[in-house]
Image (cartoon, rainbow, N blue to C red; front, side, top):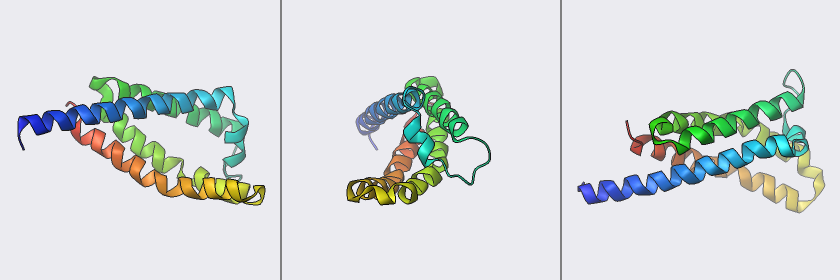
Length: 133
C-alpha cells in the first residue's frame, strides 16, 4: 500500500471518527434533554429504574463520542463505540416489542434500526484499525 493510499484512508477514517463522535455526543445529550422515549425502550427485565439506564447510556454515549473526537483517545473511543453498539442492541430489540402496536411506521423504523448496528460496529472497528497509536 502506498503512503498516499494509507494517508487517504487515514483521512477518511478521521472524518468517520469525527462524525461518529459528534453523533454519539448529540445522542448522549438527547438522553438528558428528552429521556422519555429512551425510558420506554429499556427492557423491563433489567433491575432498577428505566431512567437510570437512560441516563447511564447517555453518559456512555457522550463520553464515547468525546473519546472519538480526540486523536490521542480515538482507538479507545472506537473500542468503546463497539461495546456501546453491542450493549444497546437489547434495548433496540426491545423497542420492536414495545412499539409494535404503534402502527407500521414504528414497526418499520424499529426493525430497520436493528441491522444498522452491523455497519456501525464495522465503522468503529475501521476507526480503531486506522487511529494513531
